[in-house]
Image (cartoon, rainbow, N blue to C red; front, side, top):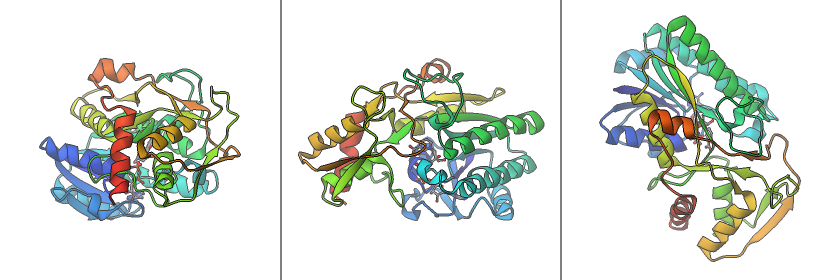
Length: 317
Ligand SMILES: NC(=O)c1ccc[n+]([C@@H]2O[C@H](COP(=O)([O-])OP(=O)(O)OC[C@H]3O[C@@H](n4cnc5c(N)ncnc54)[C@H](O)[C@@H]3O)[C@@H](O)[C@H]2O)c1
């Protein structure tokens, strides 16, 4: 299949691009490089540098390459920033995303896999199921929920079929392809940088959550497993649109992440306990039974294995 991967120069998009190419698909990466890295794009892929705001370039790209399906990763991802600059997130994640859907409709492209997020749900102290209450704790999550609704309308109006993959926290590495967000705000790389002496300390935001050790709990799913979920979702997408959780079902607290990095690195480092941040939910853990039952997907890489791979990459880079 000829697949347009938006945001394919970013963390999850670059790994998915590699895996799609390995499976014999043809890939065109469309990325503005506002956050991504040109060198992360597999040399077997076509690359178009462009923003989703540029409808005419999108249209030309669909026509030039004969695009048959889309995997849509492009967007802003930083939940904390979305609480300070909501309109920036609305524009990029919703309005520019709508351009993509319009160009798909115009070019008769009927399949899209969308990077949604666990951030669409209200926090819950047991694993989340797809039908659980949608009540984002931050504006980033709201943009994902709105885009899911837009996808349903474009299905009704233009018969564009979609799968929204609600991923939990992406982690791990695939060779040279690791998390390199700019600025980096994700916990795992930040803790690793602290262990490697590239930062003086690591802050834990909130130690009085209603969790066993008082810190927030997340479900870390390896990026290689996430990439597999996209490929399965796309290859099985026929007449019915759908939404799936993609996680491991195992909750890991912030303190546990810090301890795991101390163990792997053999280093002790300065940990500062700070106030909770606005928009951070207490616990987000996936029940991924639906994707397991319907698509045969399940997480294969365990957390420590992925963490070790990420640590080794940063240690040697
Ligand atoms: N990383 C996670 O833990 C996580 C969890 C849940 C959902 N997601 C979603 O997965 C997707 C990918 O996340 P990631 O961690 O790989 O992020 P990333 O920042 O590494 O990748 C996003 C890519 O999109 C590109 N981009 C952004 N806006 C663009 C635009 N308007 N036009 C063209 N390109 C644009 C960036 O340059 C970047 O390469 C995002 O949509 C994110 O919301 C990520």
